[in-house]
Length: 295
Image 1 (tube, rainbow, N blue to C red):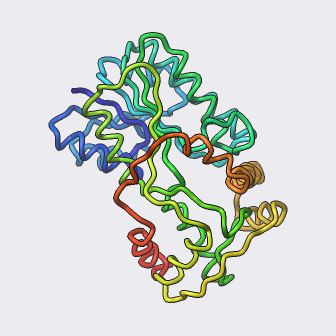
Image 2: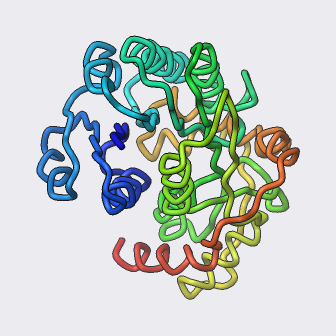
């Protein structure tokens, strides 16, 4: 089988590529970074260097593939983040149609049922819709929870402020998952290719309150009393910008936090039975402690 994977060699793509290659498949990995080419070929994959916003490049790369794995890479320098995400998804759909690909596994996100009010995930909502418009193409949307690895961004806050915090409450439950578990599911879907039509699959590894996250992370780094603090939306935006995040991204992340605070981000997830994946918060906490010690 021939697969094309978008997303270079990130936390999901690298293990995904390894699994597909180990199963004897032909794999092409798309990256915008030419320096990644050697690493990609060393894995046993073919490197396709170009931009995910270049529809002609994607069309050429997708041709002849049995399936593609689509994801929208993060970007910081945009004026309208939601619209950027939507436009990239629209380009994916154009390239898939033009290339004749019939099977797509798309990395979406929990909360993508929300057309508004969920920050960048609301952009992903419209990217999903663009793929859903494709006639004769089977699409499986993977909607994972909050990545454990996003907690690495809180290392500075914990080291210098002695707290873990966000603009949602300590009793708010967060649906979380490890990128390696997302790769497992993506590999399963791509190797089987038995999905038809347009469908959604949620991926989650653990469900914990913010206070529990602080306690588990704190215990792992030797500070079991690490407090969780709920910030106001305004303070969260200011703090994110002071940490170097552009205002557009800071506002979008705070909007996503409000969707967590209200519970709406996880509302559709609650309607779908999900078998939790293997990696729990305590497992990830060991990774976090190692990164914290090196920071």
